[in-house]
Amino acid sequence: MPSRVALDFSPYSRFTRGEWARLRADTPMTLDEADVEMLAGLNVQLSMDEVIDIYLPISRLINLYVRASQDLHSVTSLFLGKTNGDAGNVRRNNHKMPFIVGLAGSVAVGKSTTARVLQALLSRWPDHPRVDLVTTDGFLLPNAELARLGLMERKGFPESFDGGRLINFVADVKAGRPNVLAPVYSHFDYDIIAGEHIIVDRPDILIVEGLNVLQPATLPRAGDAVPFVSDFFDFSIYIDADEALIGRWYIERFLRLRETAFRDPAAYFHRYAHLNDEEAYETAKGIWERINLKNLVENIRPTRMRADLILRKGEGHRVETVMLRKL
Image 1 (cartoon, rainbow, N blue to C red):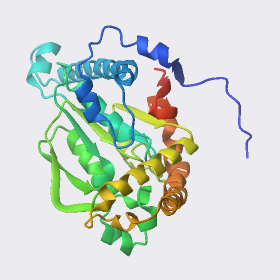
Image 2 (image 1 turned 90 degrees about the vertical axis):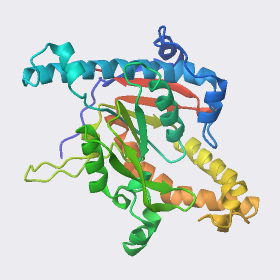
Image 3 (image 1 turned 30 degrees about the vertical axis):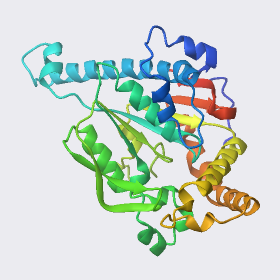
Image 4 (image 1 turned 120 degrees about the horizontal axis):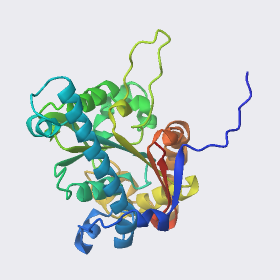
């Protein structure tokens, strides 16, 4: 077996928080304090400074990518003879292909909050006012099917998702098809809600948020085409942090839910509402180590270097460094 070759090369440019914040340039802040408070997660601290220093530059970068993608689509349409006008007329006369952003990272790392903030910021740019957000939780197999397959303890692992349905959904959106349906997942019921759907109708931008959205497929020896979800992404983001820190965030979130959502008798996890503090802590720690940490190490973190942008968090969900893939 050949030995590994040490390469003095990184595919990423690394930025400190201050360096990244300066890349905001003159991008206006379009959210106020009330917006930021509403967008924060259950256990994710979100400040105006975080939005201004980290997320505004990201929204500016994605806006530039979207405009470049629209120009490329116009030129390609012109080349294919889909209009007799110039590239500008192509843009006006042909529906542009939706720009898809993939957002990956561990349970409890703050993906949902990041996705909501980016959706709010990006929808305020005049070039792309229609920004939809879909989480891959809706593409989990129903609990009954997971139980039949013996996968309830591996919920969130790649094999627990209906991968074909997810790929077909993203492919349909990318193709510009109208009224594409995405299934809905309930964290209260811990299951798919039968008969309910989100309708995605040709957005300018679609954000796809999930644990394993950067997961590659196993390539066949015959060389047959095997698509995977990230094939359809125009830009991708991975949210990173130390294992111990994410584990602490998971446990803190579990303890918060024990005092809130778990108290409803109809909640799937109601059985945890009556645990004392020590029992609740040990239960959350056990779930984290047995399921979520294992998934992070085996499946999620190995996809980190496939992202275009890596946000590295520290205490308080504060992004400390940013890594942007070199072109």
